[in-house]
Image 1 (cartoon, rainbow, N blue to C red):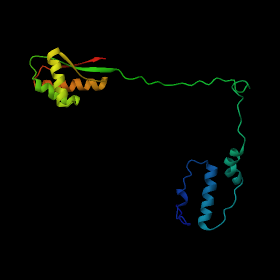
Image 2 (image 1 turned 90 degrees about the horizontal axis):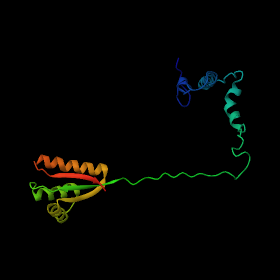
Image 3 (image 1 turned 90 degrees about the vertical axis):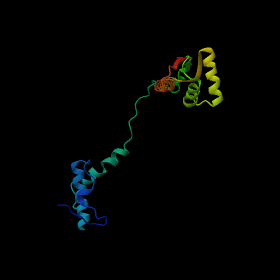
Length: 169
């Protein structure tokens, strides 16, 4: 049933007509079959009206609704809405002093998880040692929570009682 031919070599039934109404599809298929066979298609009754219907609809003037301001122009009030993004809450990550965790381990933690250089890590470690608590950094909630978890996991892995906590700034 599939017929091929013509310049394009396309089959008659391969034209995407599944979304068209049946009457339009019939006209297109007959026209394509006639072109393939080299004959002129017999005009169907109302074929031109069906094919020109979309064009006629596009030429119609669009209906306009009455103005929403009751016919007055320039008296409306424009309302601008602004979405403001809030800055995230910040949290301080603190190390707590204990008598058992080696100072070198604390320096290593500060270098590894808080990107401190050796001198800064040593200064913070000494502050924790002398004052009982020291600030490692200020972060958003998720970042602070992750850093606290990483420090606590490493301390537990090496069997040190080091405590790391976070508090809202």
